[in-house]
Structures are given as C-alpha cells and as structure tokens.
Length: 236
Image 1 (cartoon, rainbow, N blue to C red):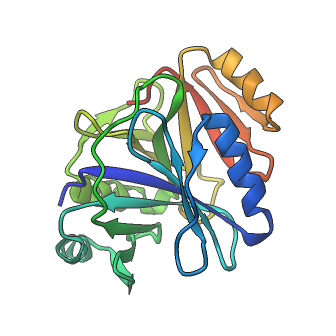
Image 2 (image 1 turned 60 degrees about the horizontal axis):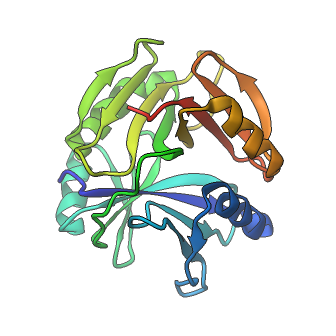
C-alpha cells in the first residue's frame, strides 16, 4: 500500500483560483500544464527537471484547502486497506476519494511518476495540522497507509515527520495543534530553503506577507491568504 509518489493539490475557491495559480507559478518558476478535467478544473505545475508533484484544482464551491494524491499501483486495494485503518471512502471517480479518520481529504490514484526534481529551494513537505484530540489516531493512520518511518523532532514534541523513501519529492509532517486551536484538520505546504531570509524577500516581492517568524521557519500567506511556511534546509 505504500505510495510510490505523493502529489500535493492546491485547491482554490473559484473566485481567486487564477490569482492563486499565478502566484505559485511565479514562486516555483514552474510552467503550468494545459487544463484538464470535465470542467478544466485541474492543472499541473511542471518542474523543468522532474515529474509534477504540485497540482492545482479550481473548486466548484468551498474554501481553499490542500489535499493529497497518493500514487499506488492498485487504488481499489489501497482504498480497502485504508478503510480498515480508519478511512472513509467518499467517491470512486476512476480515482478513489477518501477521508482520513479526522476528515482530511486525500485520493488514491495510479498515475505514473518517478523522476524527483532536484532538491534546491522548493516545496518539499506537506504538514497535516491535526487537532489535539485526533492526533494519535491520525499519526497512526498516516504511518500505516504510507509505510513510512516516523522521526521525532528536536524542536517540539508536537511534530512527527514521516520520511519517504529515496527519490520521492514530498515528505509528511504531522503537527499537533495547540489546545486553543479547535478548528478542523487541515494542511499547509512547507518550502525548504538554504537561505530563508532571501527566500522570504523574494516571496514578499511576489505578493506574500509574513504572519510569524520562528527560529527555524517563517509563516507566510500568499496573496489570496493561503498559509505556508519557509523552513531552514530540506525538510525531513
């Protein structure tokens, strides 16, 4: 069941989808593929030296979010195993739409991908931000369905990393939210860089804004309000 590739989808509300895509295209320096889907709602950000691992979706309704595609040889078999582990099957659209035990949306797909982009300064991790009451079950669930090894953090006990096998573009971080954050499970992107100050200035010039500064990461929001982090060095 372990995925051979993970894609992060930036799902945007319809009224600012194009603005969101424009920012992430400029920030990454990636081209945007031709649209696809029944309503031209999907597109890929195309790195020059590897397969896509960031994609975009214009939602028909609803707020911005991140969802994950887990690429597996047999989506139906993976979905059955994930259901046993606590997930819910939401839809079969040729790909299987799932929700984790706490309600985080992800999909099992079988699209082939194998060429990891160069490390450099880029998005290299997805943080799944989990309410405290759901954290232990959610961590166990993602460990089970990925088969990836857990690693503790030297910064805080509220972080657990799931490190992918060599050659995959994105790692996962399970973050336990604070006691005063009673919102739903959600996710944000982490952008690893060797020069956080310079990368911050570049993102600000593109229209992002700083929300908070921490010792090892900076929290930003893109022009439409999507929160993400710049982190010191490659994630994981």
